[in-house]
Length: 339
Image (cartoon, rainbow, N blue to C red; front, side, top):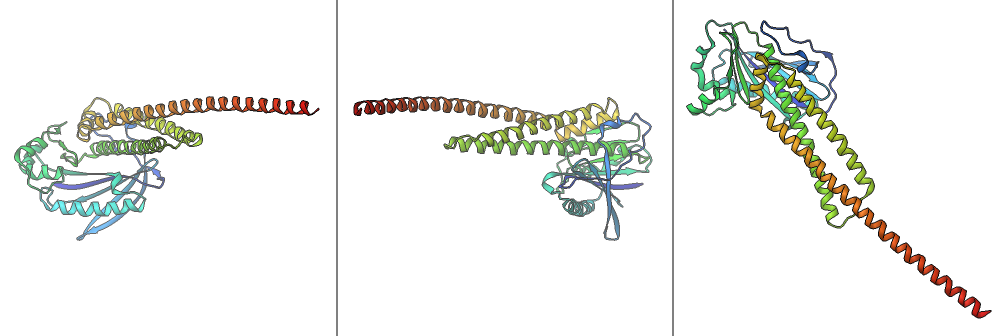
């Protein structure tokens, strides 16, 4: 029996990722998801780290323009032992060090562990005797979980053939396949984590824009008038950001629809429900509407204040003109009285 730990880290980086296109995984016997659903990847590089005489290779791939995927694979003697927690922690520590080299940070990243079991005989349900440790690894929780929590965690599972099984949770997945045919499932789990990271990046950008708008409103409320150039720049940036955000959101939704209606779609939907992607999309749409509404109010108030200033200027100009005529009449009167 072969047991593997596959650690995935996806993070936003500061440099543009370039390289040769990463070849798609070979298809499997069951209907595969549409290849267009997974964004194209480029090969960035490879690094190796040794842990207690165990070599772990980090394969670096990139999703254009700025998301780095670090994938580490290593064989494990006993995947159902709590020592896996320590190995997992060491791998992630080095993976994040690599991410930082590319200008990324832990705050804008996602990590996910896949525990793969293959080359066994019989149904995969035989391994559910290890249910407590399976649930703990899926949740990255070293504490001993309550039996009801263990039972609830193991309910999120899906099967295709008689002897394969996938169990998914927020922090990881257990995949059992006697043939070791994991690549399609792994790509879908990568895609789900990529979607989650993209949604988080969009949400963060909207939060920053809302904060800038709040500062602008606070300054004007304190008596500082709107500056036409500043407002125009902010409005232009907001329109660009809103357009890009809507485009990105629509592309993410389109990628999901391209997966299809087979086993792969059900696997992805299970992962998406664990990651609450629908809730992220709802939140982003709400913030996009808030950005638009607030800027509409600001622009309307700016227009009103501009109109009011124009009217005052006209009134003042009228009085200045009247004073000018009055002074002219006085000068003419003085001239004629002297002559």
